[in-house]
Length: 377
Image 1 (cartoon, helix red, strand yellow):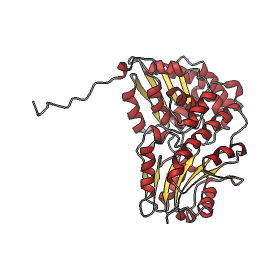
Image 2 (cartoon, rainbow, N blue to C red):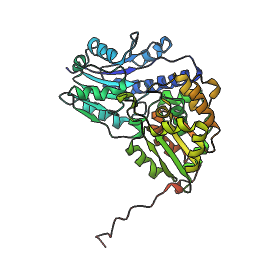
Image 3 (cartoon, rainbow, N blue to C red):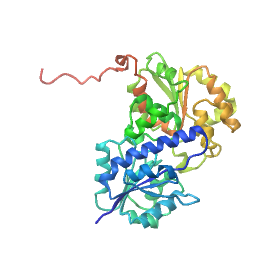
Image 4 (cartoon, rainbow, N blue to C red):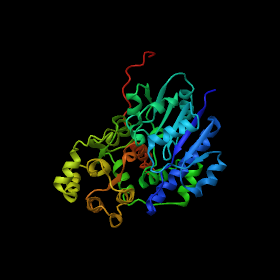
């Protein structure tokens, strides 16, 4: 009998308030996902070293496994496949999959129930969750140290790989405070997530001003970062403004080739203050995936610095380059929204809804394509 097991990996949190906030959101996402998956699989395994979370997971019927130290994604996945005798693996990072609805869950399970080896990814180029059939084959594959490169590793080993259709459900991932703020503003999320967001609220200093620009057809909003063209194409019809920008840095953690990026070079040559002054000459607002712009040969500062930057809390940032950038962003001539990859993935889809709350929806409408003369007339 085929044994289908869902594995949720929950990374430990740092000590800063914003790191604890994001971890709390990931826990809530994982609880909603566990509740949705538990009736449909043989076991849900949650890898975590958060002892205070044990009771909640027990009540949901999950098996709690402590992580190995030092933690390495590939080694952990192989160990779980071996020890829990997994035939079909449903893997999730703890911040992903929390918005999956019944139809999307059924699609994952339908793929899981097919014969033969195969893998299905929410994002082949930077995996957040995946289904792997004939999971024992993972024991023979050199798996990567993090989940971003899982698609490449399986494909290189000859496993047929497939990708889900891109949507808010498949692309949204709780990765930064901005993600949770957008989720709260949208009113989306399962019971555990909604309860968490009611209890823990953060205000964003520029979100409303950016939304003003998104809903004004006379304005231009700059987008930059690891943006999939399909997401950009889906975003444009949902907002009133014009969009411009740069797509670069995609796969930065999976490829790790450290090629120089255009905006990164401009930022270093001009300095952050002049960079935002130039940006203001071309756009009325900006939505920036800051990680490719500020990474030094692919290396990022700790989450505490990145999260503080996302909310313009420069005095909490230890890294001098990120602190200078954040101060310049906070005083930029235009409103700026900062975040990571999730901001320009599922975050853009949330923004397309959030920006219209309290505003005239009719202003979003774009002309319908001409379909020609009705042959019945």
